[in-house]
Image (cartoon, rainbow over all chains, first blue to last red; front, side, top):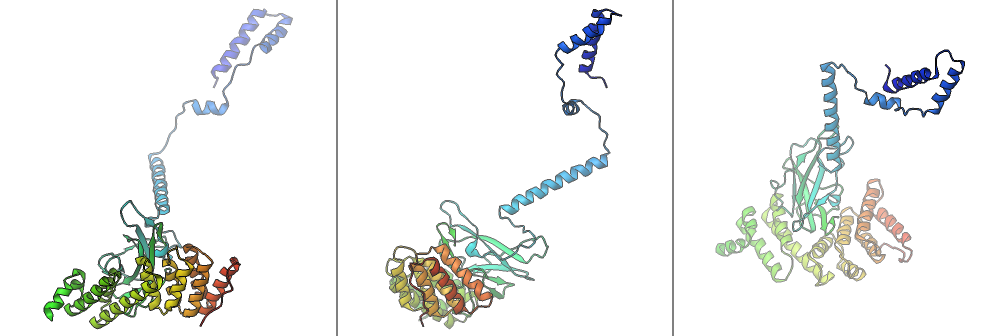
Length: 208
Length: 195
């Protein structure tokens, strides 16, 4: 394909030849001299030409749908990745280690008690509750949610609840009958009822 | 007798809703005595509710609440009248775990202006993991006198727990970690376990 710059160059060559006269032995020399004297036209880089020139592309509808599905899928994966980093419910494979409430994430807003996230691993449980002095030890007050892990085992349970500042004791109740202390939190002394509880201290800078 | 029982239970509807009337009234009396003495009462109510959830018998609930109230009083006496509720509650747990009252007094002397809640929580935790009370007291007192922060106390606890899980005896794990901590702060006196 002849582009515009080539056409202009050809015109200049022709003009210069005509002006120098046919058959003149000196004509070639004069022609060459004039061509050298003229500034070379500015040419766009080839890649730029390729980018800017319109072109026709043929695509099968099935292929277009497949590409669109891949793009949407990548977007969903990216969104999930952002949610994981923000501490939401999904776990990566290999995670699921209990996060001691004593290391829990605390969110708070002005005037409200900090919200503490409690997490526990309870394999084969059908229901898990968080009980403590901050909710009257009521198993119905804080039923925990099963998290979906990458391995699909679903052994991890979590809940986020407001906990007033200070020292508190708590435990997890599995299937309404098994009491489980938090394996990664400080232990409280024997409770007078034969069961161990865990301790969390919620300070001014979140839980400790 | 029954009228008085119901009157006492009426002071906190949570007790009446979860305990039988006789137990609720007995617990309410303990709570009232604690309130009169200026002690925290919410932990006592919570202790009763805990017992109810754990399906403990009434007399066991009352005994646990009364025992706890006594420990709260002892904790406040040892830590000082100006102590926070968290400190008093944590101190009560330490006393219930078998820590001598004198340890609480010494802790206050070692940390007169800082909260003792975390050191007391760590102290009770160590004893709950079968560290002898004397060793646990020495470790926590030594760390307090060395001026370590609350976050370092919690790390010390985690490391001791880790060592115990790895097979070390509770006593050896605590002494080892406490000596390592003292070594980092060479101004502290050498740590010795006390019986």
